[in-house]
Length: 249
Length: 249
Image 1 (cartoon, each protein chain N blue to C red):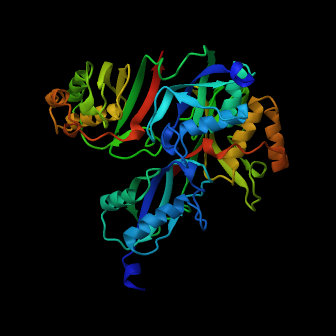
Image 2: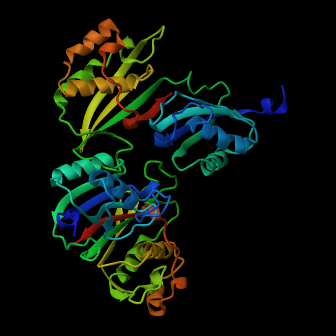
Image 3: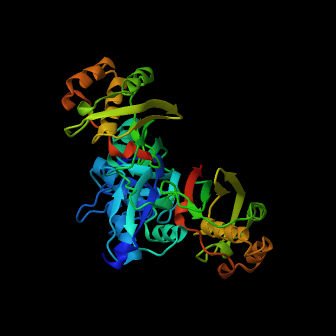
């Protein structure tokens, strides 16, 4: 064990980012990613490659107001010093909002108890250039009452295979909160669960939109839960409306 | 006179744009500009080069919620058809919010009676990635009372040479409204005048910030009006906080 390993400390960070100009969270060669950008800043401070472990991956274009991550580094900086140094090196569209030292065995993904996502749908005939990066623009009528009814059907423990883009051995998840609110000219969908399958939030929102347009009945949702077939569910809603609001520990 | 000229119609448009990713309004070779992007879209519709005349130029990074412009084109499309076609061809960060046919002698710049600009200063220790494109981030204390007092001094008719980055033969302008409001965690400066000199709004805001920080007294503003020297005034505030709210006709 070398000296650096012996004196390594573990840090938890909370992050806000505008995902528009990034190819998602996860590092990909030759592409600008959130994880890659943070690791670059950290590596400048530590003068060696530091790996950042996120609570979960966000797709290209998805935003965050409360993503969480951890990294281990043998640094002598205090928490406020590291917080400032990191934000000074990060671009304005990625911000650390909190940083604290945690026990060495803390793991941002494995210790996460849950996640809260929000999806914004802006109801308006015309696009607003100042909102279009952060909300799906929706110029068609939607039946809010039916969408609320449908949203309630997702608040359950069950096999969400029909609402995911990949097949897992353990596809059972529990959504403990599935709500739909009208706020000004926007519909905001809030989903909370211990964990989500890939594209699950965006497929649920896609399905809610199909219900709102009258293309499918809320009852069809029960059918998708029974048949577990992704082909029955609706198109995945675009990334830009989605925001990872909070990771629960 | 050819047929196209004979049947040319004149159109007034009102525009919203997020100026972040543009090199300002005015066409520059090899650079992405607002005017250039609109002319490109129009030229696709008209199948010939159409020139767009703006009410005024906005600098690189400056936004607009109510820029105005006109263009002449021999088109047979109705107003709603042209409105839709233009927005369909424009990127999401430039939007036409109104379009109407106007008399052939209407001129967006010469007929403008005034302009209203707004400048947003966000008071917060940390940068918010979802606001940083649209407001100046200001983490230091500001004396609002003194800034309000100073803002009132700009509401006048006078020689604004000291607050502009170029020298004009006729530097007299009249600011009919100079206000400063606190709105949540933001200070919003609103200025209305028949016309503004180059960088005038941003230099006035820069001066208000110097007053707010206690670096200069409000009385120093009178001195700049007397001496008409740009060197006495404060640094030009960054473009991103500025938005052209409305052009008055």
